[in-house]
Image (tube, rainbow, N blue to C red; front, side, top):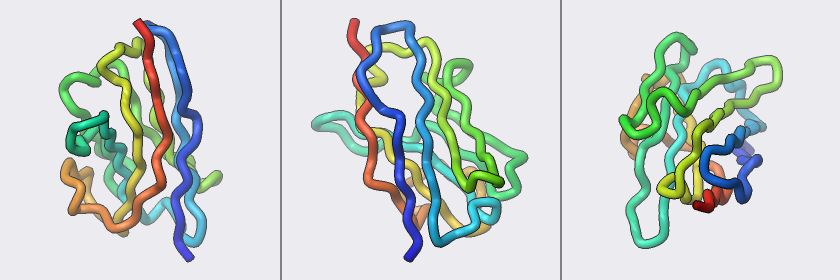
Length: 124
């Protein structure tokens, strides 16, 4: 059964860094567009970053441009979200998502496989 499992979340001070991982099983990640979304308490899930299935095109939400980087390691069947210069407003549960041969989509409905989420808390 296909599954995505996120890890790497935690508590970090403002200005710090975290790297989130999204390990895929049951699917070959090189054939999949990958997306990262986040959801803060009381808010809707929002787009953070995406990578198309070829791995050549990325897209970022404006507030994370220049701070976050999405990537994929096909050999490890794992996607990553490197987060630098973290701010308290980045605090949320972060989810990875995948879609077979998809584009770097920014909407949740474009993805059909989701992980369970990992908590990121940034203290001021």
